Length: 88
Image 1 (cartoon, rainbow, N blue to C red):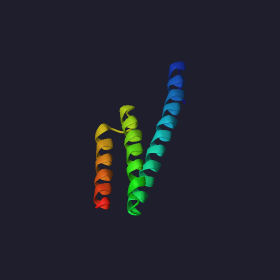
Image 2: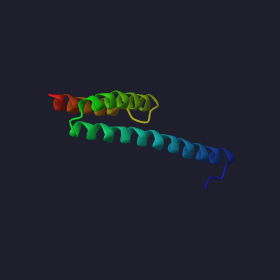
Image 3: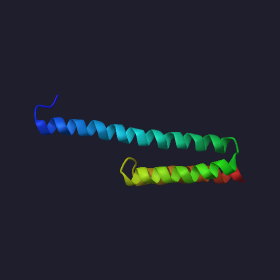
Image 4: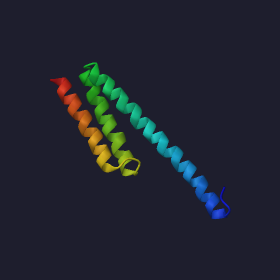
């Protein structure tokens, strides 16, 4: 455990930040799973709506530094490609 007052505060802050980041990651992950399921079931209209929602959530998470911008771009690209091939 921390010995200094500032170190104790920093430990509290890091716990709060970790909880916030985990919450955002959970939301993004669940959105990704919903999108993948919709694509596999060939529900194109729903999948397109979910893709825009997913892109928004992932982009905001990348701006906050929860995901790197490259990771966000890669995830969006792969799912967009998956949706495009399923819609053919």
